[in-house]
Length: 70
Image (cartoon, rainbow, N blue to C red; front, side):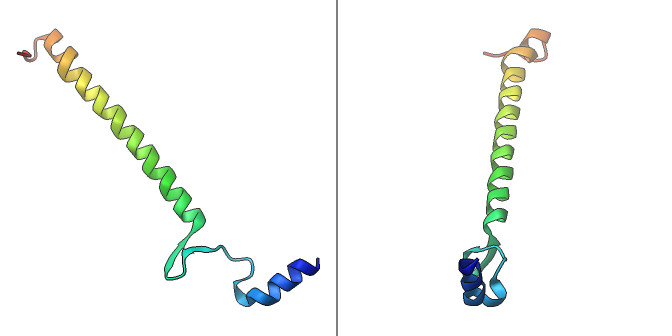
């Protein structure tokens, strides 16, 4: 219990608050992790869409006679 009290007196008002990534940037570590999760999910969605479009252009379209591939 002594360590927690020492930390509380040393930090003052900042005790119990999340740390920021940089002192001049008001973004917490949790917010940074959420940003990484969203961008990773978005990248995978983009990759999946690109594969679906490629399959449509390369195989599905010519099979139905929508266009020809030379």
